Image 1 (cartoon, one colour):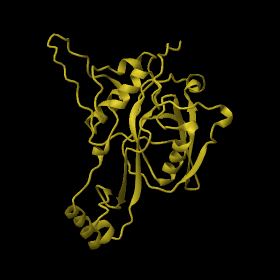
Image 2 (tube, rainbow, N blue to C red; image 1 turned 180 degrees about the horizontal axis):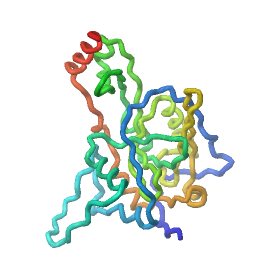
Image 3 (spheres, one colour; image 1 turned 30 degrees about the vertical axis):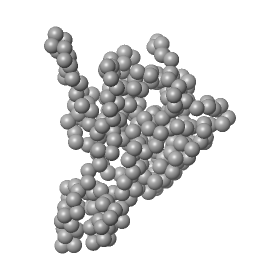
Length: 273
């Protein structure tokens, strides 16, 4: 049985649109290499599991690169239940101890996502160097040794905070690292009054990709909130859940920038090979 949904907030809402006005699905080639990072998944639980996993706080936490633990001044409060069994618990604790955000990765099966920001929260240039060990390096843009001395051309990285519904009962905040081709499609959605802003409360997106003859095509399609339950068997997020997920969103502090001296060391390594 579907749960009773609370009234939605409307601060970011704009004019709704009819099925006839809905944009066609976006097909685009993927001509970029993605940095490999671990992905996460967990088994489907009961319908109460998602709401139980989201706790409420007296104040909405500020956006940050890693989520700070809650402080509890109540000495009499019983100790919370921690830990768990199964691969789902393994994946959750792995992300909590990782120094990297968990990345959203599209697959051949369509997945629902919800954007937490109306635009990218971080855009930067990245070098990809084929070597053992660390291979991705943030471009310094000004007097960058990898550009000037190694002659490597960086690629553009466009980062969005999304809620990933791969497991509808346990949605997770992830970072979608898009290249310029995908970013252009999302920019068009952001400029269209029927699909703007991207993080509108009643707006979700279906994302999938298909690879054929070494060419990858992404399919990005808007999904209205009212169609989630019937078409995707997913309950729309409540106002409280949206606030909670927004507090888990990442910011520009996740960007790791190496010094010019460190990058010169990589250049010497490349030139000596």
